[in-house]
Image (cartoon, rainbow, N blue to C red; front, side, top):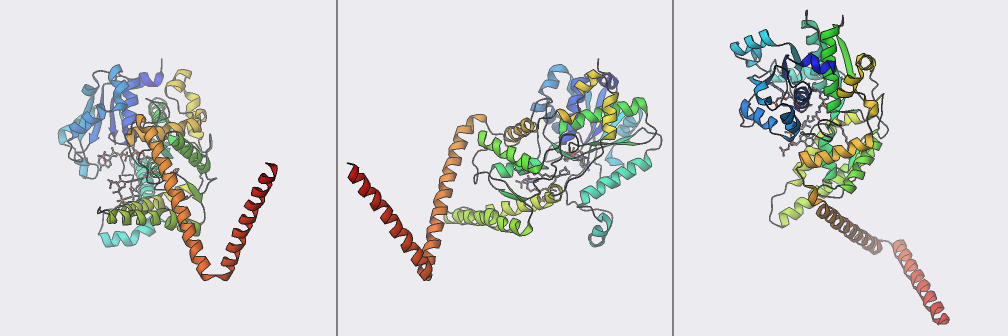
Length: 455
Ligand SMILES: CCCCCCCCCCCCCCCC(=O)SCCNC(=O)CCNC(=O)[C@H](O)C(C)(C)COP(=O)(O)OP(=O)(O)OC[C@H]1O[C@@H](n2cnc3c(N)ncnc32)[C@H](O)[C@@H]1OP(=O)(O)O
Ligand SMILES: NC(=O)C1=CN([C@@H]2O[C@H](COP(=O)(O)OP(=O)(O)OC[C@H]3O[C@@H](n4cnc5c(N)ncnc54)[C@H](OP(=O)(O)O)[C@@H]3O)[C@@H](O)[C@H]2O)C=CC1
């Protein structure tokens, strides 16, 4: 019997950010392993024209929750969606709901956050904020990392007699094993770049090939989170423990290996209707990177937009490319550095788990096979983000062959034009050209003569 699963049975649990990537996987795992938990309160705000109830309905009807619905058929009765907006005073939670939460909640998992890198700080006048932001964030690469640090500080300062723990995941990726491999539902982190590369938009990135690609599967983060919840409540450590949920020092993989495997998977399962053939060059040099941005990214976008204009359609590729390059530039900080995270607390926790718990709540990233994981990740991006059917693979491969032929044709035409221009302007180029032509002619004549002799 899993002690962790038993711990959550009969409990009332509050999750913030349950509609997000990690929150959904957390909720799914809780229902699957502790189906007799009492209730999960989730703080939800209406979004994109959907009410809070519609959002919950959509989550429960997604593929992610298929297994849960078999194990816990009354799952919808065990979710209590509470209207909330964490940006508002008292989170905009009604008095009755707040009362219920305060009196019934046993455990809180706080996952909500805005994960955009460029959100604005709000408390002051915009002009003042813009001026002081660089000073406030100091060496940090963006407002996101600065506000995460502030969040940790507030939690530690205000915790009083609560048992709390902090989990710091690195770059969270698709599921490794549970409830099935490769599940992902948003464009953050590597997922957006995998799409951009697979569709042939992104062909070069300023990244350090040997830097550690510290990815961590979302189900690993969730398993650690649930184990931490159990340990913190049962063992009540004297101080607030920080758990690094990272792969870098236990099972490192670098960006070069990762890029290579991503490209290898595109060969087997290409994405549909690619703009260009997928390729991923990593360069550390700023000038080379700018060159590739001009030649490999902006120029094809401009040419394609020209073609769209010629055929009476609205140009759009330059806009898409500008957005993509902006996103890539925001992620560059993380792909050009390696960090060493202490996994002392995480390993200590692992040693405290029973063999059964180590199996059910596995967060031992040493068991992760990167090649298999990345292949499943790319497949997951294709299936769950792009919603592409596997039946379309032969057509996608044909399309890539056509793109390759267009590429060869285009390059040959370019070479001929360049050569023609050179010949027109330079005596030396003309001499080289006549030398090559006469050499080829003599070569062919010799072979013709020798084959005639044999006959
Ligand atoms: C073979 C190569 C593999 C190489 C693989 C390298 C992986 C290298 C990963 C490093 C990753 C480090 C991460 C560490 C720490 C966290 O893990 S924190 C969680 C991660 N957070 C993020 O990734 C957020 C990054 N994104 C942003 O901050 C904002 O989207 C940006 C970059 C500022 C863009 O803002 P914006 O111009 O206002 O654009 P926004 O309205 O957000 O979106 C515009 C369009 O772009 C799309 N979009 C948004 N985000 C993305 C995205 N990430 N990608 C693509 N499209 C996107 C939107 O869907 C939208 O499309 P439409 O709806 O218009 O059709
Ligand atoms: N993804 C990653 O690579 C990493 C993530 N993390 C951290 O893990 C946590 C979860 O991230 P992830 O699931 O990827 O992020 P998502 O963007 O997928 O989810 C964020 C969640 O927070 C909710 N939220 C944001 N603002 C508010 C608000 N004002 N009121 C109510 N709810 C709000 C969102 O609700 P809604 O659906 O309504 O927008 C959503 O449920 C975050 O704390 C993040 O910083 C840490 C390291 C890496």
